[in-house]
Length: 125
Image (cartoon, rainbow, N blue to C red; front, top):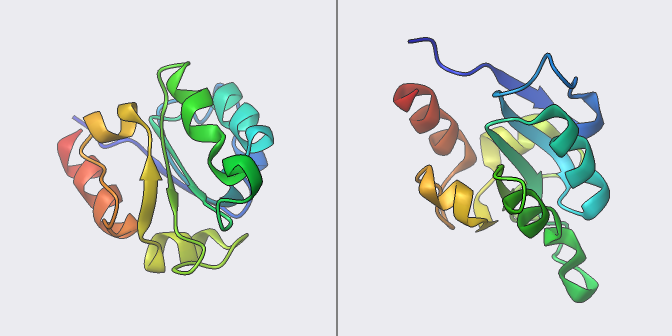
């Protein structure tokens, strides 16, 4: 079985609906609702965002419950661990800060390194 493709995109808007379905999407985007809508259109296996400091009313995490409602795994990395807008920093330096139930079902947990979660998902699939 082939592992899902890894898409490293500074902006979640770079994902292509249809072409990126089932991918591991590591982005530099904030985890807000506008980012979630782009992820929903592409339907990755998991979408990784930056928590952007969480923000007022947890706006930086809004993607997580939204995507959970569409059965898409999603998590954020801490803004203190990776640069916002730089997906390679998300992958190399990011530490998971929050995740939805679908991501937890895939084995994702707060405190996990983004690189480790990607490697685990690639090995599992």
